[in-house]
Image (cartoon, rainbow, N blue to C red; front, side, top):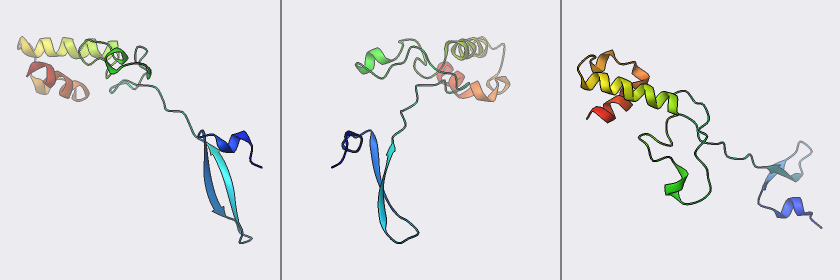
Length: 105
């Protein structure tokens, strides 16, 4: 009789053929999904959850759920400088350029 470990969906059944020629069943526990992370610096986003409706999962600010507050403030400052013509889009650091371009246009 199989135990509760094998009846749950948290364990994945994998059938393998061993060197002796017989086939065996192995159960591997699935890894949990990682949390949301910033697209630029890869730090964890604290406000993003996996539960509830989609509108409450992400902050309502610009790039909410994609960028951490630090990277988001850098992008907004760089976009303001490009709008005021203090900088050109080519002078913006390449990792921030696509986000700045989304604000400017």
